[in-house]
Image 1 (cartoon, rainbow, N blue to C red):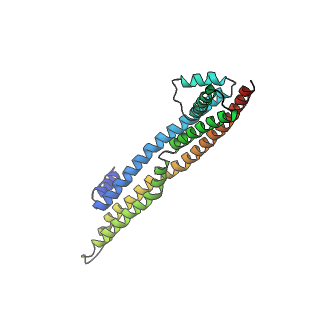
Image 2: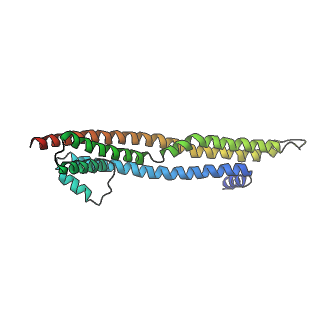
Image 3: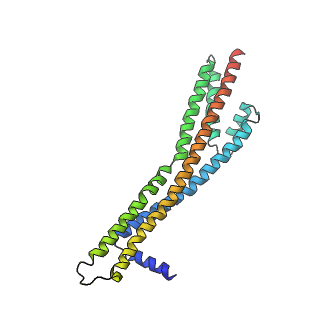
Length: 228
């Protein structure tokens, strides 16, 4: 308890520059933790939704029935579901126009799915760059606060005839807190960025593979409809 009070006392008695650095690091840490928890929930939900939809998609269900089911479902449509609805709705829209070649049917569906994939990718990657920025800059921001605090401590000794460790220890201690706060903000951000970047990359690959597989199915349907 006394150590906690001592640390808090050092923070309160730090110079304005060091206090500002600490405030910036604290804000960056809080913001990064909020992003970490939200991104974790988003990516896990997207993976679960993909697992659930793929099971229904490859179960042999009629595509029209599946499309009607997912468009009228109360579940949150995300990821793979959005690619499917975007591609199949465009496919049906072009087919209803009549006199559209199979190639144009598939090209239209693929174009819609590419747009949906781009939006999903952007949504999954949103704010990951902030974690990377926090992880790469916070140690240097903390180091700046430390250097400034040490400079201030030694500058105060200019008019002292006899310098002792006791005179500079508080200033150096409060300065080192800035470095600790910088590492506290950076380390979780770096770990989360690496983990979530890998997870997003795997999800993007999975969505892209589904797009290609679904395009093949639509191509077969278009050719079958043309022959009929």
